[in-house]
Length: 305
Image 1 (cartoon, rainbow, N blue to C red):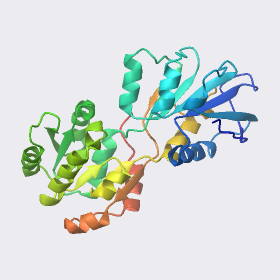
Image 2 (tube, rainbow, N blue to C red):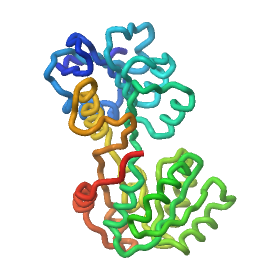
Image 3 (tube, rainbow, N blue to C red):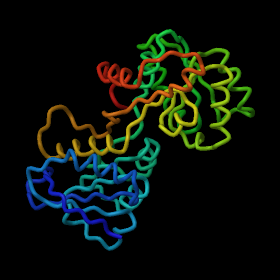
C-alpha cells in the first residue's frame, strides 16, 4: 500500500529544483509516523516539491531515477535499498542500530555517497548521565553481550574523563548469570546496559532486574520500555528526535551548512527518564529527568563514533 503525502518540501541537494526526495520506511506504524512528523517539521521548504513516501513492501518496480536522494528508515527498508546497490546515489540510512550499519559496511553496500544516522547514543553520554545523577558513585559495571561488546574499547577510552572506574561482565560467556551478577555487584555501584539482542531475552532481563533490586544497584539502560520494567535511568532518542536530525542532514545535502555533515552521525537530540519509584525503593536520590537533560545538553558529548 502506497502512503500519500502532499507536504511541500525544499530539496536542496541538487541544482535541479525538479529533483525529488524518496523516503522509504519499514512499515506503516506509530513509530514511523512519529519519525515522519519529526522529519516533516524540520525539512526546509525553500524549493517546492512533493516528498514521495513509501513502505518497504511498496517499491517493487519503482523507477528510482527521478529521485536525487533517498532516505531509508528502519531495518526492513534498509534491506530493500541495500540490495539494489545504489552506490552512486545519495542515500541516508536512519532509524537503525549501529549493528545494522556494520552489516551493511561488511557486505560492501555503503559508499561515500551514503550517510548514516545511528539510533545508538555516544557512550560518553551514558557516563555523563551516571556522573550527573549519582555524583558519589565510583564504579560502573558494564554488562555486555556479543553485539554490545563493540562498545568496550570506546568505554575504556571515555571513562577516564569522568573519574569513574569500570568493570566488565561478559553475559554471553557466563554459564550462570546469577553468579556473574553477584560477583559484578560486589565490586561496583551501578550497572549499565547498552543495546544488544541478547537483552531481548525475557529471562536475561528478569535476572538483571532482580540483581539490581537485590543488591541495590541502579540500572542504567537505553530504552523507555526497559525503564518501565524496573531500571532507574534511561537515555535514548525518540523516533521524532531522529526524524528531526534526519531532516537537518537532508537540508544540508548539496549546499554549505554551518558545521560538518558527517558521513556517520550519532543522535544529537535525546531524552532522559528517571524511574522515581525505583529510585525511592533503592534509597537513591537523583535529580529530575528535566534537570539531568539540561545538564547533559549543557555539557555536550564526545565526538560521535
